[in-house]
Length: 148
Image (cartoon, rainbow, N blue to C red; front, side, top):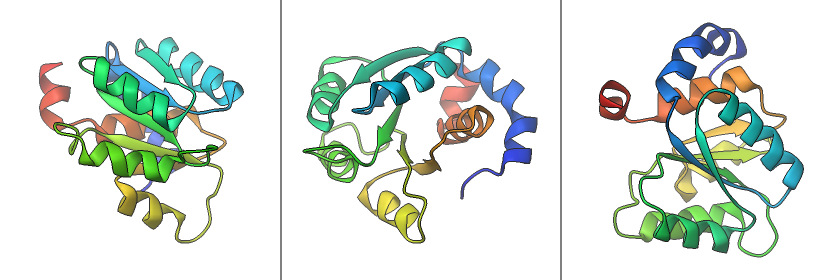
């Protein structure tokens, strides 16, 4: 269930503190979105890796240790975010990796399509930073939050 903006605003300071040091993979073909997400995440102490396509995201995931979260754009040319999430979920060791779908398509049923494809959660563009932080925090496994 998406986090409301008021709840997210209240959670943001705690979420930001607990997310510092996490490694996030942003998969998005639009450099403006990558820049906005990277700026917000790095401002809160996270390390950000970036892939411009689903295929590149999968390859980066396979060769990079300890990625804590993935932010996946849904609408990309070629291998879209839905198919990319399906492929990631089939890879050994990635069934429980938190993946948050990020999309401008906030239509009825889109959230369900994202979850069915393997997303852990879903946020709509334009991304509200407090909602982003609260969603990342809530999506991160409890043991990772406690033991960092």
